[in-house]
Length: 449
Image 1 (tube, one colour):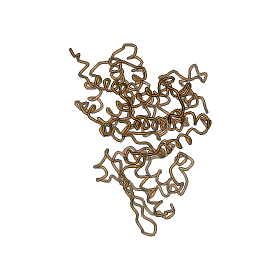
Image 2: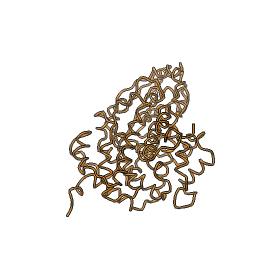
Image 3: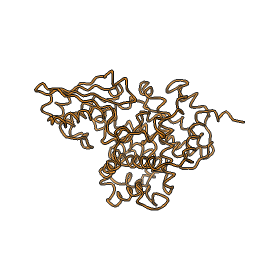
Image 4: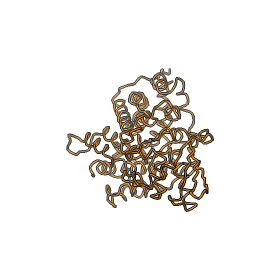
């Protein structure tokens, strides 16, 4: 006889996690997983450079002696670093950043685990988080909630449940308990430097949920239907969670970023870049720039650019920096450029508006149309439907490898970089990614300054 728990959304998600554990992942999925894991690592070594991260790491170091923190705190700080980079992967389907929740769990808890288990933990974490985020896309943002932070506890709990080999009941309880730890406000983006705290705290809550569930502690079985969805979205909306995804697994439909910055500005930046490259336009030749994009891209923007974290969310600044400094890289968003007269001039020429056609295609497409008027009166325009890194415009593993090498320079030696890459592309033999693989990355992230 079936129990009441067997008819709940948490039970369905838990069963889905166990189905992933027993499935055989094909080579294409494994390659995708390894690329996203490498990209998440690379992103963390950008995010760890902020003063906020340094204070977070110092605050959780064991006994203040520079030792690595315990697992849940380790995952929390990794999550802050990944999300704070504004360079991590994302899901167009769920409008969230799953690497910020799942990669930290893998790096905090996977030491000595078989590579196959790590791969499946990534898949399970992404699937659960994105399914829940998809149900709230785009309503989360329109109601003032940050989808990544709100769903991060579930992705973390699902990934860790698989890593810890939880049974069905423990996995279900981890998901139910994770619902108690989600919080995320879009208003937090008005201070980009500290916004990732809500993602980090969400991941810590998800880890705690999985650990408690492993000890036999239960959550309320219908907490998603009766609590989470009515509070954050609307009653009944949970029914869409288990409908098929765009791809077989959620991670297959995720994008990767070729450069930092909020994904909502990438299409505009790419459209502008195409124009100036195609027509050999110098920043002094520009007389005006019009950006037409979807509404969420404008609503998530930060108008006052005072810090690096603000620049990541300002389309006019990103375009101006591209015009003056060249292709967007980490340094493009450095605060020393903010008062550059040429950048300030071009930035003042940018006007933004909602393009009705592009808005109608969101969230299936995150596009932008950019028009550049030159001082001599000529006008050039370009439209981007899918920015680089989307499944329709994928990045190669080599691009992600180069990103990892650039981001970890100064943190990892050349030999250590090769070792990490070898673990992920199969060159290192053995059933696990190699003894000390996660320990090495944890030490370098937290103890290298």
